Every structure is written in structure tokens, then in C-alpha cells.
Amino acid sequence: MAIEVRIPTILRSYTGGAKVVEGSGDTLTDLLADLDTRHAGLRARLVTDAGALHRFVNVYVNDEDVRFLGALDAKLNDGDSVTILPAVAGGAFGFAAAAAIASHAAATRAAAAR
Amino acid sequence: MTRYDNLLDACGGTPLVGLPRLSPTVPAGAPPVRLWAKLEDRNPTGSIKDRPALFMVRRAEAEGRLRPGDTILEPTSGNTGISLAMVAKLRGYRLVCVMPENVSTERVQLLRMYGAEIIFSPAAGGSNQAVATAKQIAAEHPDWVMLFQYGNEGNARAHYETTGPELLEDLPTITHFVAGLGTTGTLMGTGRYLREKVDGIQIVAAEPRYGELVYGLRNIDEGYVPELYDATVLTRRFSVGTRDAVLRTRQLVEVEGIFAGFSTGAILHAALAVAHEAIRDGRRADVAFVVADGGWKYLSTGAYGGTLADAEDALEGQLWA
Image (cartoon, rainbow over all chains, first blue to last red; front, side, top):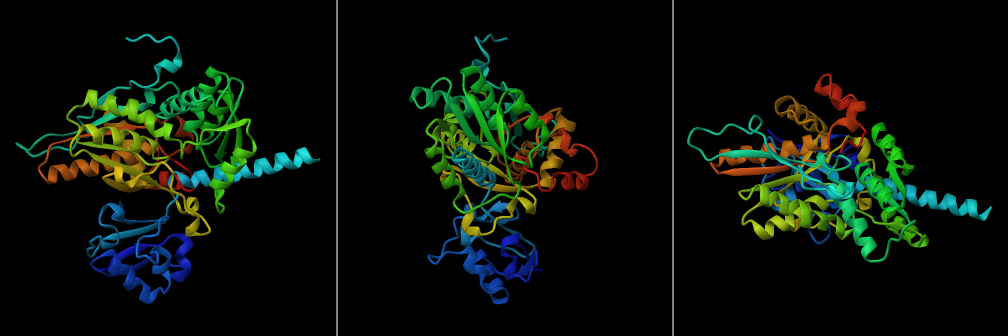
């Protein structure tokens, strides 16, 4: 049995469009190295040059955040499910809202200029 | 019964109720494992957000940043807006809310009823450095006061000063605190307080995992972590999908008679996970979790009826927490 890895929309360019891929490894580091052999470039999007998980990436093993399970050293087992998501919780919306504030203010300025 | 001079004074002091039917059964002779629900829907506008909204406004007033007649501008997915609208009405401010178009119609109706003005943002929004831009816009409009719940220390402080002490007073034997992770204010404030007072307490976050549409950002570099977030306050963090959140929300009303919104279902899912682990390890546990709001505002989603798959489809692309 392998480890199932769920890929977010924005990273599917590295997996040929696949939503779910399979990999293996005893730790998250090993898994990402294994995935990178078939999906070149994926690892570099998740791990910084300094060797840490990217600040805006969240990785979950069986629905639990790996940063609380040892981060890249988190232990994995066959049959585990790994989910990769961009860090947008709470903030997903903060973004959309902020964009709207910006466009609203731009419209207000344009109206004032007329 | 308790008497208050006005509605604002009735904020907080919510009941903590045991869940004897939902708490998992422990083997004979094993230490007890109990679930407790803090009913934050009993706040003046029906959600936990009354606490930070009132606290942030009072602090801004005390600091002289907010004066009668001022306009407050706030990005909110709903509950904070409703809370701010009520506070703004009673304290004499105008409120402009920016919210995504994919929130439930009840939330929009409630906001307008309370007198708030609404600017809708695109559901699949997302742009580079948007939050920074918003702050800049706020700076360009000195007459608009942006409390900005994602970065306002008063948001967390409200829970440090109220939610935390209430929990400890009602449940001195607390071993776990479980709440939702959005602005992170509830977990940061309550978590810091309980960590100071209770040795070995576990602070557990339940983060909603939405449908793919919501994560449609162009680039991972455009992610956002609220300024308030400090990972060292948390012990664990769970990502809870729509199906699990709906399942638990329904269970809560079916088994214990508590009618809550879907974010509470996500929180309960994480609370049950840590309760079952305690049983497996033969440890005593008093797990307190937050009922963030009631289910009323989400009835129009249709996700309280039909099969779980139907409910999941109904919530696809929606910000259900």
C-alpha cells in the first residue's frame, strides 16, 4: 500500500493535472523526495531553500497539521492520507475582502475625479 | 436570572453544558472522558464574535481612534460584521462591511437589518498582497476606522480576558480546549490564558477545509496567515472537511439537542478525535469546545436535510464557517 497525496489546484501543473497521486516514504521529507522523482518541481514549491515548509503551505497527515507532528520529520505509514493546501484559512476571505476594498476605493476615487 | 443595563453588558458569561450522550463511552473502571459545549450562540447577536467586536470597539474608543459618528470598515465573512453592526448601532457609528458573495443570504439580511452597508467581494477572490493593499486603502481614508480582526490584538485579548476565565471557573478540571481557526483570535486568547493556568492543557484547533473553489488562488506565494496567529499557542491542528463538519453538526442536534452552525460541527469532530485518543490511552479528559453560533443563519444552504453527499454538494464553494 502507498501513501495517497491530495494536490491543490494550483500545484496540479506538476502532476499532469492529477488531483491525487501516490508516493512512499517513512517521513514527509522522504515522501516529497519520492514524489519529486515523478513530479519534478513539486518539492521546491513546498519546501524553502533553507529546508523548511513554506510559510504559506499547509500539509496534513490524516487531517492533522504536520507542523505539530514534527513538520518535515513527521512519520508516515502506508495507508496514510496526505493533503496539501495553500494557507488561506480565515485569510481566504481576508484576501477576497481586501481586494474588494481596493476596488471600492478605486471606484470612489474615479467618481470623485469626474 | 441576571439583569443588565443594556445589551452590550449582556455579552459573554455563556453557559457551559455537558454532553453526556455524545461523550464517548469509556471502558468499566477507566477514567472519565467528558465533552463540554460552551454555548457562544447565547451572546447578544448569536455568535462568539460579539466578544471581540465589543472589545475592539471599546479599545479603539479608549485609545481615541474611534469617535462618535465615525465610519468603521471591516472585512468579515458575516458573524463579526453582525456583531460590529449591533455594537456600532448602540455606540453611534456607521459600519461598512466587505464580505464575499458566497455567504448565506441570512447573514446578508441580518447585516442590513442591523443597519450595515455591504460591499461584496468575488467568491474566488485573491490578489497579490491584497491585505497590504487594504491596509493602505484604510490609511488613505483616515475617516474610515479599520479594526481589522485578523491583526487586532484586541480580538485575542477579548478571549484572554473573558472566554478563558469563564471556562476555567466552570471547568477547573479542563484538559483540552477545542475551537475553530479563522482569525485565530479565539484560540490565541483563550489558549494563552489556559496555558498560564492549567499545566499540560491541550489547545486544539479545528480548521475548516472548504471545497476547491475557495482555494482557487493563483499562487502559493499569495497565501495568508493572520497576523494574530502564533503556532506555539496550539498543541494540535486539525483540518476538517465539509462532510465531517455536516455529520457532526447533525449529530449535535440529533443527540444533544444543540442546533449549531457548521463550524461547530468541525470543532466537535476534532473534540471527538481527542476524546477517543484519551480513552485509548486510558487518560482522564474534560474536553471543552466552542459552539460558535446557532444553525439559523445556514438553513438556506439546505445542508441540514437530505443525505451527507447532498449536503456536501450544497456547501461546495461556500464559506460555511
